[in-house]
Length: 411
Length: 91
Image (cartoon, rainbow over all chains, first blue to last red; front, side, top):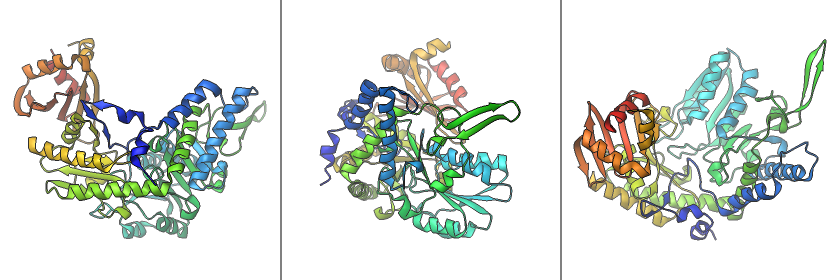
């Protein structure tokens, strides 16, 4: 049985006090806290195995390489990819999306083409496409959202044309928590010969995900939002897509050979997958941390993780909805929403609410949450966001709501 | 005020995204009480809420000062403008 109180014991940071209060960490959509198991795995790597990976003939390098490759296996199993050849380690979700832009779209798209995205995206799934569109001349189109923040599928479908070559959507909004029906969007993309990119930053850490069942072409996500250290992210891509893509970053470890010929010049042969896309010394320690984080989540069970967050979200929505001064954004049905609740208090600035909460040791995020077009569409200048994870409890939600009432009383 | 003196009080200046900039300033823990006193002396207190936050006006600008050492500076053109105002308040 899933027990958040037992889970909490693995997270030493939760024992800290801030401004004399026990920490309530509700900023999980920005980054998660790390369990002892992950901290120890990283520490153990640097204590016992640290070396550069690949092509080192000594014992430490071989062991570090094995651990690094094993981390790719863990990720592949976690999302049900076919093999590690489909798992490229990046810095984070943003870099993974940029890799798709510069390794796939830069070479495949031209002036006549269109990229289709939505108004509910994080800036990391808007800006790379806008930058590249200025270089290649393709058009970026934006599907609308409904008043409750959910994607307007009709708008998305209506924007698909013969020119649409790539559809890129978030799996779950980092502001409203709205979960998109990715199977439906994959079908739409593939029926129209477009490839599908999914930003899984807010979904992979929180729910079971099967890339084959969803028929994803590309999936990007970050390790640090799922208990792993910062600096490690993942790009999943179907093997046939990666095989036909050019590298994004060039350098050591991503080539098989670099030969110089006086007549022909420099001739480069790329390394096999996934290493072709992992130039330079990778973040080995964080990759090992990610593997341990996945093992930790697997022990809990991703269905249980999702169920726990749904219960917390349902409870938070119930308590917050009882307060007439609070406006909540996003769907209210937890079956179509992940553990994110964004809101505003009538007559109060969102940054003020966050600063007040900080005074009580409660950590939330305020502002646009890197999703300015979504806020614009909802007619907002910003919002306060509380986001939950495995170590959060109902008692924390009660203290959070009580504190919001105190804040309302003193304003 | 020199940059060095400024750094004595200010730990971090964060610029929120958006057209009208909100600047969030974090004062250094060790010198925050001294900094808060200086700011309260120079700025005009418009409102005080439970001695937790002070709304101040200074030179047509509005800022909110928290006793935890955070300052919310609303609707500034950019970080530079906010830092200039802050330097005047911290003299």
